[in-house]
Each structure stands twice: as structure tokens, then as C-alpha cells.
Image (cartoon, rainbow over all chains, first blue to last red):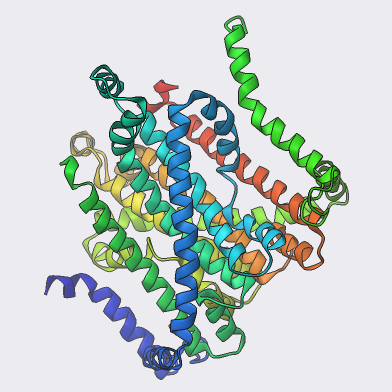
Length: 246
Length: 260
């Protein structure tokens, strides 16, 4: 009952979406009734278009995101651990961080062509810097006393890095990864808009250009829903992963 | 600069070293034809191209178009986001209505709605600006409502006790007290605005830095693509720096300013 009350506004909007074009308040080309959109979604699913493009999107998203998070976290922690790396990399990271990540896409197209590689590289580079900065801040915030006591107790530098610094930096890294997750969806969809050929972004813009607006709305809602649930699942996993801190 | 020691200078040298080395390596790699001029035009070629584009007026025009779209959308998102955020915190009906919308809208990839904006508003400034505003408004709403909710009750009670009306309470107590956190929301929204403006231009065309980069790409004009990304990177960092400065200026009275 409480969830129903909470999500009642969404339900009302859905009803309005169905009613407005049916009653002629809005041109049904501009806004196909929700049931038509649902029917179009079902036929996209049956025809396999949704599955094949979704699979393609999932692959490039995971590849780019995992690369970005692993490399970013490693780089951020190493910058704190080895001062010379910090001195070298930090100015570059700070200079490039405010760059609008979407501008990378044309350069990646130039270097890697119109395929999956450019999409993955755009996602990777877009996710990299936020994760680097969060890992850097997380590792820098590690209590010095913890490190000194571990070293004094005879732990090797490597053991301290793996067993003290990394776990202590984990909350920040995981928070940075959440930003990277949101960014990876943005970059995935836009790279697919621009580069085309495969993926949900391509499917949406293809359907829109072809005038199949009910199917286009179905595609947009699918991407929005997948992005939303990915964030929710990530949050749940993150809470579980950080449960040891309580 | 009496405090600068040799060690500081050494550190500064090391800090700018990688950038210098990278630029030199870039120049050298293309001079030695490690790759083709198409894949990596020389740094000097790109800089010359930037100068030409600035002199011809093409780059300033594109920059103006992109900034106009990004900043108009940002201002819409900022104003709308603050109003909705305060309403969520103060009016029960508004909370009931907007809360689920915001919790769904915040993590959702808004860029997927681009084709819908094209369908509804066309491919000109209007639809780009609205796309920017739609993408940037959610973090502002979230920070503004949290800021209003976290207001110190004692502050409000004292103001009311001293005879402040609702209007004065809003303008002289609530808004200034909530301002630091609202600023945080705006600082998240600004880079989003620029990202989305560039993307919308890449997809819809119509001048602007994003559209010009795509145009250059289609004509295999790689110095144009690289000049574009350099211009966008500079524009992005100038905007972000400007925002930090605005924050420091406007919050001189606030405790956080003392840390600087």
C-alpha cells in the first residue's frame, strides 16, 4: 500500500500519457498512447531487435566500465603511493577532468573507426578520470597511523597497499564507480547515436528517423529503465560490500 | 615569492614535466610519421589550425553557440531545480508528486530522450536548450531540497520569533543558509550542461563545437577534430574554474571560506 501511495504520481502520469493522445489533446504522432508503446515494445522483443541490440550495448558498456574502473582505481591509488607518479599524472588529470567527456567520441571515431572499439574507448576514457580522482581522494584520506602501525608491525609495503590502503579507499572508489556507471550509460547511448550500426542508442535513433515513434518511445523507456535499475542494483551491492565497516 | 625554495621549483618542474613531454612526444611522433597525419596531426598543426579558426571567426561563433545553449539550459535547470527543490522540502503535495519522479529521474540516462526532444521541439536551439535543462535539473533539485530540509530549526525559530515574515524568512534566512549546498548541486549541473550541449550538437548539427567536430570528422579533416577537442577542453575547464571562483566569492561570509 505504501509503495502504491509513493508511486501513485508515476501511475497518474502514465494514465495521463495514455489518455491525452486518445482524447486528442496531443497529436498521437508526438506522443503515442502508452498501450501502443507497450505493444511496440513487445514486438521489438519478439522480433529480437531489442535483445540483439541490448546485448551489443551491454557488452560495450561492461567492457568500457570495467576497464575504466580497474585502471582508474589502480592509477588513483598509485598516485598516492608513489609521489613521482602523483607529480607526473596529477596535473594532467586535473587539466582533463573538466573536459566534457562527450567530445572524446569524434576523436575515438577517428582513431578506432566506426565500430565497437571506439564506443568502448569513449566509455573507458569517460569513466577513467572520475574513478582516478575518487581513488586518489580515498587513498589520500587513509589514516597515516594505520599505515605506520602496519609497517611497524612488520607488514611489507605491498601488503600495506593491498590490505590497508585499498580497503580504506574502497568506499570512495565505490562512490566514484557509481558516478562512472551513470557516465557509462550516457556515453554508451551517445556513442551509439553517433556511430550507429548496433546498440540500443542506434535502435532508438533508427526508429525515430524512420517515423516509428511508438517503437522509439519503447526503446527510450527501455534504456531509461535499465539505467535506473542498474543504479539501484549497484547501490544494493555497494551497501553489501561496505557492510564490514559498520 | 620569497617562500619558494629549490625543492618547490623542482616539484613544479616535475609537475609540468608530463604535459611538456606528452606535447613533445605528440609533435615528434607525427613529425617522424609514427602514424599517419590523419590519425595524429602534429601538435603544431593543430595549434595553427586553432589560430586560423579563431582568426576566421568560425571558432568564436561555434563557441558562442555552444555556450549559449549550455548556459541557457543550465540557468533554466538551476532556477527550476531550486524552486522544485524548495517546494519538495516545504510543501507536502509537491513532495508527494515530485519525490518519485526525482528518484527515478536522477539515475536515469536522460540522454536517451534526445530523439524525443527532436520529435517535440525540432533540431534547433530550443530543443538543445531544453535537453540540457532536462539533463541538468535533477542534481539541483536533490541538493536544493536536501539543503532546505537540513536548515537549522533554531535559526528559523529565532527569525520567526524576531518577527520575520514568510517572505523575509525565505530570502534572508532560508536561501542564504541553504546556499552552499545549492551551489554544490549547480557545480554538478554545469559540466553535465556542457556535455549534453556538445552531444546534442553532435547529433542534431547546427553549428556549435560539437557539430563542427562531427563535420570535421565527416570530411576526414582531423586537424579540425583535434582543434575542436582542444577548444572544448579549454572551455570546460574555464567554466568549472569560474564556478569555483563564484562559489568562493559568494560564500566569503560562510565558514567554509575560512579554510582557504
